[in-house]
Length: 421
Ligand code: UD1
Image (cartoon, rainbow, N blue to C red; front, side):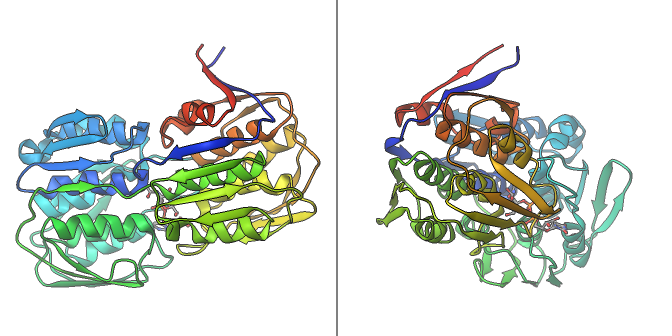
């Protein structure tokens, strides 16, 4: 039998959980280390599969690494362009491998890589990344599986993104920090991890202003230095525990976070009737019944994050009435709805990007699968809230992005275990 998480549900979660560094920030900061002219120390690095794959890529590219707990020291001096052929396997597994392209363009004025992998949540083009690389002066060539590019020199340029893209914004920053002149990026993503990567680059000596707004200005510098940088807390992992508290009618203090990053979620949880109390660096969520139905539409930050819509689908399945989710960032992010239906949810797709949830009295445990990373977390929450036993399969998705998920839920009182083979 395959590896699975087994949950005997129905226990209201109680206690405290501390949140690790953010996956999506870490995946931007690790490639930033490629640009340093001396060793970088990255703290609060989450111990997740995606980060581990990135670390393997850096090592294969020639970096010297030392890892101790959540601290990683990266000496990038041995990184060679010629080593890109060694990371094919890792790069195809991980969408954020595209940041190596931006960082290599900055450092070597050329990049070459297989097209990136990642979660199966619909078409995920990289045309906006290429738009930025080309605007800076790169000649880009794409074959069926590979992307390669080269620039005689990189020159600051104006780039407008449409739609807003987290990946393209971060990649354009990585590619332009050492370009000649000034680069202006319009319609940029405002996610906390975008700001975190900009903060890290600025500490390294970059001159980036406006991160967290619609327009980012980057004045090119000659070199960047290694610094010690601590990754911002993961608002998606935090939000997952907040939703789990509400779904199990529990009472959880989520610690080591930046509450402002979770405002869109906090307000929806309150609208549903839960208590959400914000402190300086923690949030307490107390779940209440009945849950009122709500509608959400996923939007770029500060709107409701697409990465939390799947866990919210679980909560909506338990509300007293009809809720609706409109997914405006990705197609194919509703595959989990079919899994929830197996547990007794009354949920269906109205269109490809609109799902409707008619609340039911309870969910019932059964065998379900994680259809992607965030859907996997949603399935675990569904199991925690359900009556009876739930088995969640396809754990490789969940382990890409959640630190100690099973252990943390167990310490909050859940009857949950990871079972191998
Ligand atoms: C990042 C996150 C992911 C999150 C998503 C949205 C990382 C490693 N991953 O993904 O967890 O779900 O932001 O918050 O940070 N698009 C284009 N052309 C492009 C790039 C994107 O059309 O070149 C479109 C996408 O198809 C999508 C939208 O832009 O519809 C937003 O995607 P984007 O913000 O780029 O997501 P990722 O960076 O892939």
